[in-house]
Length: 365
Image (cartoon, rainbow, N blue to C red; front, side, top):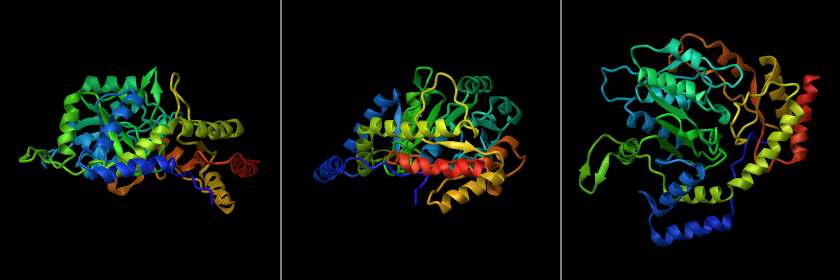
């Protein structure tokens, strides 16, 4: 069976060397030398500052909300954050978990990112933040969103789980907002098996988050505030360092797969509209069909031919009851119903890919 993605597995020999060092030092967690090295190398590779490694991408979001004062321990407060319904559930469920009510605003029909025109309509006296998503690594309208946030004194936390290595107008997309969070889950372009990171605009927010991610402990005899355990360990960092060493090779292979799909399918299917002046990281290949019926039928046909495609992101989150399902967002609902992500990973062969394309084209005739 061809999966929708496969984890990138780097050189075992190099990974073994890192693991040998871990055994020699017997330092497994609590900001070990490999975590420190990975932090520095990622800041250099991504072109950012104030990067904090954490144990997963969901905790990255939760800590960002706390560090920036969006979530609170005051039960009398009912903060809200405006976000997109077209995303992985963690974007909104992490808000709910932190006591922040997600308020959905609809997406742009071409880019599939949160539409700034819909943000103003969703603002209430309880709004404290905007949580947009760079969907499939596609840049949001960051200038417009940042302007709205500045006007209303909102915090902006970008869910950039898909946007590893994406540059926009000559600089890292992760530089926008008060914070941008990354997921380093095994299925991502860059991974540390599990893991994540937060890139803060301000160093003081980074220092606040550092306290929070380690139980609020600031010294051997000091506990200054409420915290949680969100530390990345040395084995995660070892994998991350190995994957980072081979990231360009991985990107090149994925780009080949992505461009073949584009050449063969762009004339007959709707693809995501890319902003100008953006580099792309080839993390996903989503396509939108003319109807939900057609999308479901093709997914079934692909599965019968040994191929797993995925309905990212279905259902639209505004339909999820525990997230406070309310006013439906029609564009998100429509795109979510008709979309499939096709298999893309570095070892997907051209023969396998042509088989996938032929199944789709056969159904479209």
